[in-house]
Every structure is written in structure tokens, then in C-alpha cells.
Length: 278
Image (cartoon, rainbow, N blue to C red; front, side):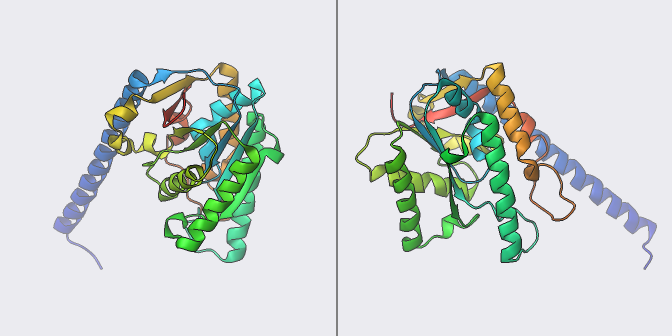
């Protein structure tokens, strides 16, 4: 069916308006992101990475590297005992509906990527734990499922006995990140051992409005570490191992990280909210 020249002009004008609107929103977000990043740098106190034992809890395979890959690499260089715990199986990163078999294939692929990434950071496979909770479903847990997840985290804490615990920021945009924060907090609250709790940032750096919830007291507890060139290189190598998260796959439609996301996380700085501890 043919359209009139007037209808064509209206359609073209609509497309142009939508395109300009999208570009404006994208530019605005980028500007706000940079401003928030500069404020973080201004407010965060520089600290040195310690050789204290640590455990890093990550919702998905790549969050540990994005949020604190440089810290992990530095601790490995210092000889600090460190464990990385992945809560979910990472199997829900497909744009298409998947069968249980396809989801298992995706989970296995992401597990192998995680092991390669952590090897690049200097970790041993024996120090990596996969809890294999369902990706994308942490917020929908009932009481029994939630308690079971908390129990698994408590078991890791009891076995590893870390001095420092790293967990996602409480408002880190992605629901699985927020749920991971709550689950880890519940597990640490039930422990008789004192932990130093450190929040790391991933999606809240990209969606900078997530940082608006920071109170004045929390902002006074922001810290940053500066990565030496060697550790920065290891972080880049680890991020490159997560190929499924940034490179299109001709065999399946996976959810990819936004354009510019990995470049944004190539900064020589990593930021943390020191929730408790010295």
C-alpha cells in the first residue's frame, strides 16, 4: 500500500524526532555519568590494597572483574588468600526463550569464561565457588529459597573465614545485584566473626542516578584504589575473557553489554563504599 508524500514526510519527521531524542538522552546520560565519576574521585579517599584474606561475592560471571578486578589482581600479587563466589549460574543472558538444555550450555560457557578471567587475575580455580542459583530470579525467592541461599553463603564464610567481604552496592541497578547485597548482608549478620564489609560498584557507575541514594555519612566512607599498570593490564585481560558479554554470537542472541561499557571500566581507579571496618 502506497503512502502519500504528506504521510511520508510525517513518518520521516517522526523518525528524525525519535532519533534526536534517543541521541539526546544518551548524551545526557553520558554527561551525568562523567560528572558522577568525577565527584566519586573527588570524594573518595585513596587507600592501599591490603594482604588481608578476602571473599568477593558476585551476582554474575563478570561482575567481580568489572567492580574489583584490579583489587583481586593486587591481592593475588600480595599473596593474600582470596575467594570469589558467583551466586547465579549466568544462564539468563539470552534474548530468546531458552530450553533447560540451552540454558545449561550458556551457564557452562560463562563458567569457563569466569575461570579464564580469574586465571588472568592470578587466582586458582580451587578458590572459585559457583553457587549456581537461578540467574535473574534472586529477587523472587520465597522464604525457604532465601534461607537456603543465605545458608550457602554462611557456609562459604565459615570455611574461608575472610577478614574482608566484598559485595555489590545496595542500589546497584540490576535486581540480582541488589538481591546479592541483601543475601550477603543477612549471612554476615548471622556470623559471630567480625568482617570488614566493602561495597563495590558496577551498574551504579553506568546508571549514575543509582548513587543518589548515598547519604552524607556513606559518602564520607567512599574509598578508591589506583591500579598499577600491571594490575590494570590483568584486569583488561580478564574482561576480554568474557567474550560472550560483548561479542555477538552467530549461534544465539545473547544480551550484550552497552556500547562503551568496557571502555568505561578501563579506568585505573576502582571505587568502594567501606560499610564497616578500619
